[in-house]
Length: 86
Image (cartoon, rainbow, N blue to C red; front, top):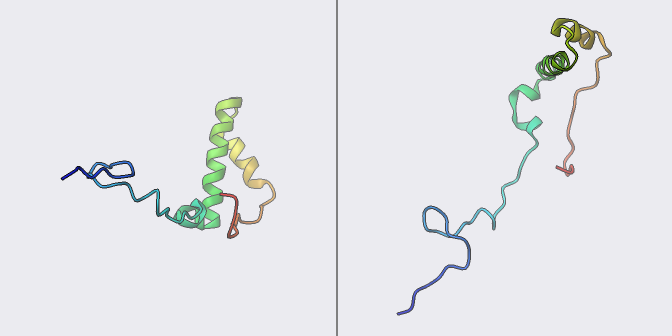
C-alpha cells in the first residue's frame, strides 16, 4: 500500500487546514465591540485617546486638550454599511 499525501498544508492536529477553504464572515469592529456600539462611550474613549496622544506630541496638558475636543461640535455617530471596503 502506498502512502496518502494530503493536498493541502497539514495543521498541528495532522489534518489539512480547512480555514482557507471556508472563510469566516468578518464583522466590523464597531459592530462587535460593545464599547464602540454605545456612541457616548465611543466618543469619550476617542477623546481620551486623541487627547493623550496629542499631549505626548505637543506637551500640552491632557485635560486642556480633552476640554477643547469635548467643546467642539459633536459629530454624528459612526455607522457602517453592508458591503464596505473592509
